[in-house]
Image (cartoon, rainbow, N blue to C red; front, side, top):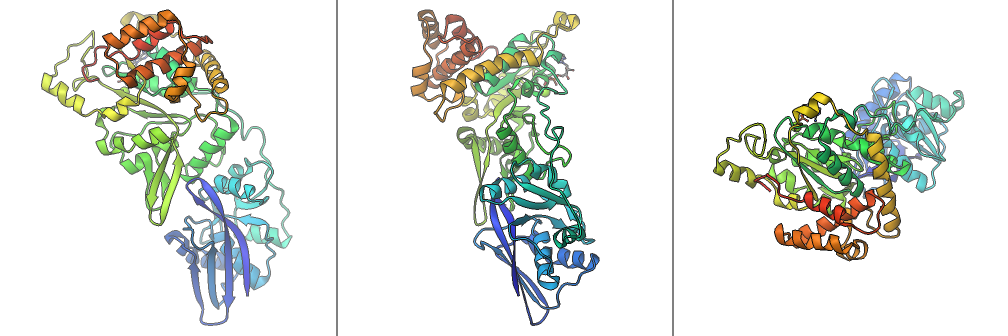
Length: 508
Ligand SMILES: Nc1ncnc2c1ncn2[C@@H]1O[C@H](COP(=O)(O)OP(=O)(O)O)[C@@H](O)[C@H]1O
Ligand SMILES: [Mg+2]
């Protein structure tokens, strides 16, 4: 006796079809699972056995073989419990599980159904493959229900599922209310206006976000670097629904979704600690999990106290910064996770932190300054377009509590610049000014004669490298876009040059 229940698996954040084939034959009672299962799946045997018993059913006392097909792809996770149990019940008591229904769910020993990882990407992929009906754990039903044009049924126990397929339990597919997927983009718990003064730094954040220029904040402790960084996502343009689904898929695979808020609508802000391992940072593990750089996808990756990060971890960032994705090797293959983020790095200028501080003296020796410099990864610095010196806020400014613009008002300008870039790069793989090829820089960075003169003198005075030169041009393009200007004028160029200067910092 043989039957097949449809389920799904996941590689990276892509789902694929899995047939759970169940065969019950006469012979000594045995229970085998084949088809490249991982350890968690092999433990399914015990969970299925107990769940069946505690729901009032018997595991057939026969030779049971479960094959997860296609057998060349590695399977991971605990969501095959439910399809296995249903396959057994179909064979033993004739529970009518429709073949067009995809089943996902982990069983606990008492027959309850637990939430599992990766439901959203599996449903998205299987919908593309033509499936329209899904049975999932109740705690994953909202997440699955985000996918349009499919019927999702959420269950919290094996008994319910059996009754549903047997026809004694009526159930309607999940329908999400608007509140469930409510766009909360404009309701942040922090705002840029909470940071007093720091006009130059705020302006740099605006330019960075508008053109996706990676950013360095450097200055003494307490200057407000971390405070500024945490507010960057509040001035970024809202995510599109597709972007939100993409981010949510990553969190789903990582098991970090809150069942109550199925869709992640705000851009992520990730701030890993400096002692994070490189696999925590870029992803990895025997069952590959997305790392911080993928959890920061479409948002901000903030590396606070940058020189404290291990060289190995930092070097691992290089490739993803180029590619916008990260490939993690594992036994039997490679897994790719998306990783497009705005990199924001903060650091003190020296060991004691007071180099360049107008209010306190630096007590570092020249040797210490040199050693500090050595800790900073040159290849990463090379990929950072904007360098901002953050002085402690001036006493006057603090006392006057001069808060300045709100995030919302800054975001409006950013949106305009992003729109302009969308038009500019239509049909190109480039999306932002910071990612322009040299060819595109030539085509799009048209400037006035005065701007050109300024650039020429900067090249000489600042001893700009070819790379530095390109960066100034790209930043100038973004500054002009923020004003809606087609031609780069001298004041745009001046601001771009300003943000390149090795002002004060001994270490850059
Ligand atoms: N410009 C500012 N406006 C308001 N508060 C500030 C400002 N700068 C610093 N602070 C206060 O000082 C604290 C420390 O700032 P923080 O961002 O942690 O500094 P840093 O990261 O540069 O060491 C903040 O939590 C905030 O309370
Ligand atoms: Mg800090």
